[in-house]
Length: 419
Image 1: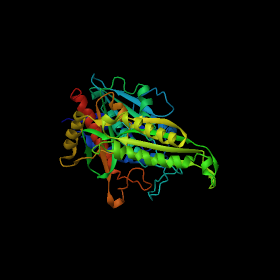
Image 2: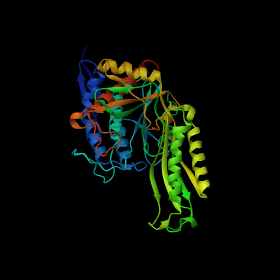
Image 3: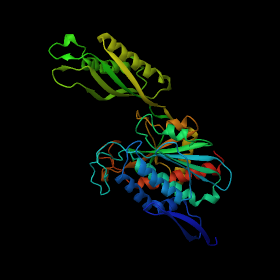
Image 4: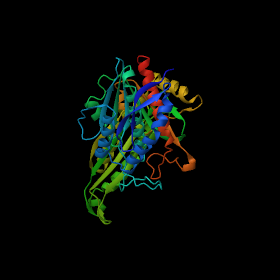
């Protein structure tokens, strides 16, 4: 084949794409191009890891992402929210529009790893891999920008804030038009229980629906030595916590996975004072569509009845719900086909569904799509701690694998006319 001069976008470590003319004797494979970009993505990921930002506060992260995408020739769409980025690249030829989503927020966790690029923000850490998701998506954006004149369609990137804080940032991206004209959406999530160099797929339900709620119990204060003259909100709260667990064990089919947990309890001022107010912070998760709507009503009924039996009153505040996340089998088939073309067979695991929740599900209510699990485990470097751990680590080689797969899957979907 005769030598061909093309333009390739190479983002540097500062997040600035620069154009270079490179002469190649044959078309580079997706894996070759992804490997060429890998060190740059490591720089992006480590920068994001050192400067994590909590949900709805991702201002510097938003600016960083926008700068990279603008240098790569993407059009930034208006986002009707303080944080988050929606960017589009239109191909030369008509075809489907593929959306790729990455979440960008961090967690209120103090990092205890010893990596040289550990978080520099006290009490905030990328402990769920969103820095990896972002680095992967930026890499895919850069690689697809190389192919702009050969794209049989359009690609839209959604860098979403506030995945970790219900009601979640997906709703704001959708309200900003992120899904307008989209035919399919791709997503990924790092998996610390899956070896690096592997991905996990599963059709149907993979992440739980959830109901996050606060309970404020109002009793009547008094002296600890005369509890009969008050209504002890702490005692009522204890009964509420116990009663709600009976929903799972006595009102739900044992075949259906359900969990209801309380993560915070706040109340009382002194050891000899009957508390007049207690606040509980809870979450419920389930994997069966038939329980949608039922779980919140069961929780409400149980709490109000317990409070009434003690003469207390209560407020139940609906913080937000994420839908059940169900992967489309046809989209999983695209992942499988392209992964095996790139890396061979025998490197895809059937992953179990989990009772964690993900507002990627909100996009899937509008178009077909799927979220694959990206293996990040490497026990030699202790990259095997669970999501949200203070010692959470990843094998950064996963960034290369995720970038190659999403790039190949996007090109495949476009070239096959949305199939």
